[in-house]
Image 1 (cartoon, one colour):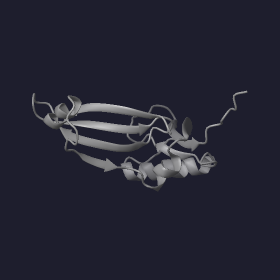
Image 2 (image 1 turned 90 degrees about the horizontal axis):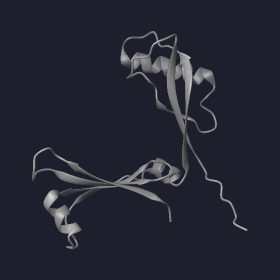
Image 3 (image 1 turned 45 degrees about the vertical axis):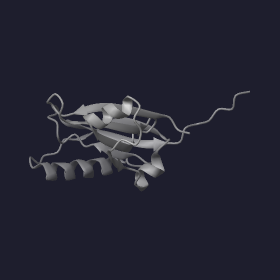
Image 4 (image 1 turned 60 degrees about the vertical axis):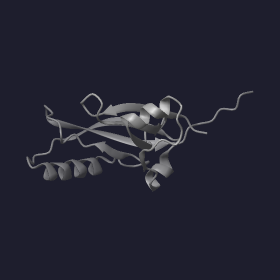
Length: 141
């Protein structure tokens, strides 16, 4: 059995309206496994003991989630040449090429945040990479 993080949040701004979202994530990888949306009245019934309350769910496990759930997410930041393009899509492409050129995308590393949505000062541009690695198991003696 794998460890999970459960988050319950209220969606909506008016008293009596909205929905409750129950999200379940894999603790190590941070990947979303499923999310259930319930009307506030259905949620209230469920936490006061009524079973089989109605809700809608999204089941997330695509192949990427299946392959990486239970693995530890690692992140690192690298600096590359600042993109010259002002158009966002062109800037993203320039950053991608700079990251490829840096040689950092080996051993399972992928771009998590290309930094094109933020204003960065200086001659270098910061990019966040991530990968998933197997957890080492220790035998208790």
